[in-house]
Length: 255
Image 1: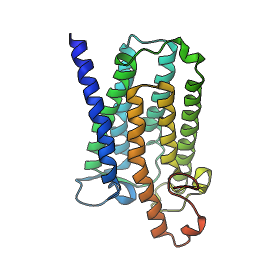
Image 2: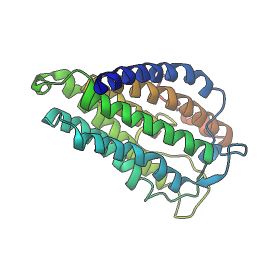
Image 3: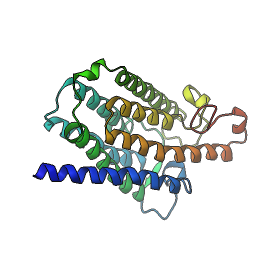
């Protein structure tokens, strides 16, 4: 009975969660999120980005890892999908903040909202994939679409890691001056790191083919597209020659 109740509650929450992405997206176009170069007063105490990253990403890793550990679904297809998820958020929670070189800051409001988001998202993904959604049988490994999804995820992950490395190496340790990034997908767009992450979760959704993965891909797009446009505008406003590079914001040659 308890399982049936939580299953019903879970799908109700997932429906609201998906709808929230659609409703929230237009508001994100109105003003940049107050973090990094866009940090401003009025959003609570200013915090270190390194601390903020660790605190906001840790729930994603440990909640999902905990559900996987106790899940009855331990077949290889579930392990593959879980490892994909945990690789990304292991990097985000432990590796990425360790190598941060700049003095970027974030606000308490962004940290708080990010923790709420990562907690809810990791619960929905783990509980859906590993417990509630229709089971994935061994035909997973005979389905070309699943492999396409994994390859798309790998492509996005590579773009994301490569872009983070380019951004990280723009400055010497302790430096605070912003510079134009070059190399990788930055030759074509201003927000290569955001594009990479979006591609990752689209690929994951194609491979997993479950409701919560589709919702996360939608949320990623809804969140990162507005950020990419803000990033692009910032470069145009702050570097006189940036327009000559003929870059787009988010999708090469298009947007």
